[in-house]
Figure 1 (tube, rainbow, N blue to C red):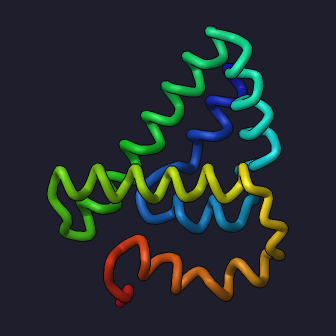
Figure 2 (cartoon, rainbow, N blue to C red):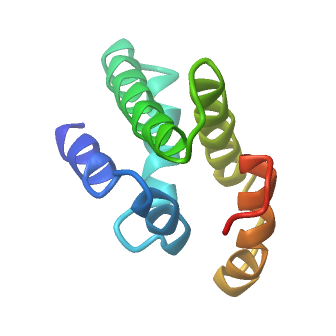
Length: 117
């Protein structure tokens, strides 16, 4: 559990978070999903997953604050962004990395509520 928390939160900072998750170079959706499944059976695992989720949402909130959003909008946009990401992997859509990269500007525009500069 400790190594999952360290790996999945390392590199999760501001702007780089979006690229890190999409690239899946230091982030493993399969490992993340496995831990979430384990958390459904273990209170200890659930507590760690909750802390990691809260940490990630806080970091994404910082991105929105840097982009000029204020709370409560920044935290709501952070939650929507994070819930979108977790749901994306939970659904196992099977989109190729190139397809995902191609759609990234559309995802960003939808999540930001505007077209990025």
